[in-house]
Image (cartoon, rainbow, N blue to C red; front, top):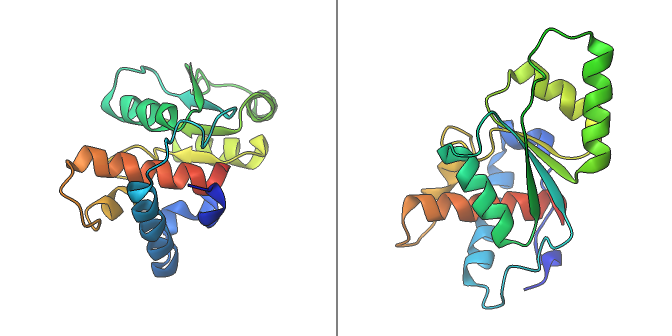
Length: 166
């Protein structure tokens, strides 16, 4: 499978997916699901940050599994960004994260903080992408498959990662 098949979906718009964007993601998820080639090379060399308190939560485990299965390296980073800090410190930290990582998944952080990281990092920043409450999680139920719901969510998550990082 070639990553060029996947159409780019801007990460900033994942909260407000249009019907067309949702159709593109679903179509790409179906392509990925049918791909016979190994997926481990699709994001090889990509470094992702998982900003959350614990990497043992269900959302963190799902994100780690989805990204790792595609060949990405995921680093767990305890945020510590919610502490009262001067805005310049937060901007500096976000820029540094953007230099270190190709993408950042934020879990359990205030939406305003995720937006600040997204503005400053210069890489795709996701706000709870692996959460069952994220708008993309609803797309998994629209896939025509007999796979367990968690596996379908992982497939949609992988599609988003490929669409925004490859």
